[in-house]
Image (cartoon, rainbow, N blue to C red; front, side, top):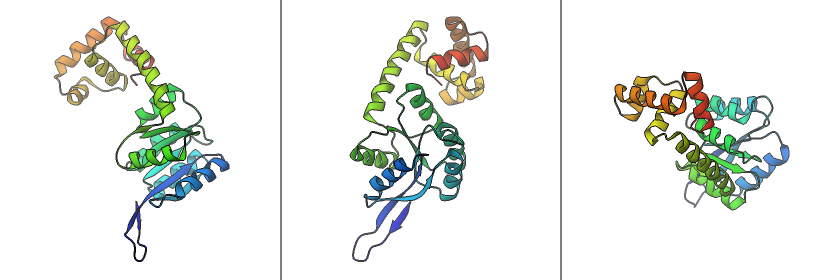
Length: 222
């Protein structure tokens, strides 16, 4: 975040934005759109995943626009690396893909926004400010696609007859958490976690960690 003092005017807080996309036209369009706003400034640009990571590490921007598909490293790969060195930076994916799997993975990684490239300037401004102020923003078309996927997941989970708590435990198991860690996260006893784990195996037929991960992934839990 940067501030700018204009003589005779109130100090303006600037949201520092890094734009990463391998298409010049897209970057130029984003710069033109975002620079119009008095509370936003473009602190850097990157045309591939490796450059995006390096500039995020150096510039520590408030907001990073990432494309899903980039040379060097994909947007999803670079997002993980960026958040490990600049955890305060908030990532917004800007993509042509409304694939629910991409959306889910982006949010799981820690992205705070996911927009399609045909988004209006007005909605983009709303998204940037919402994410900067601590919220999460899915573009209107993205939210529709994600809701469709969520409904499918709910139906599949119901087929297994997993309770809400069992779904939470399954997701944690798939991420490699131990019973103790799961207990601490969910604020339940280790013995209760063990009971849920047994019930999950019985209901899903998942006999080992690899099988449970596959099931959790199919259900959209991880």
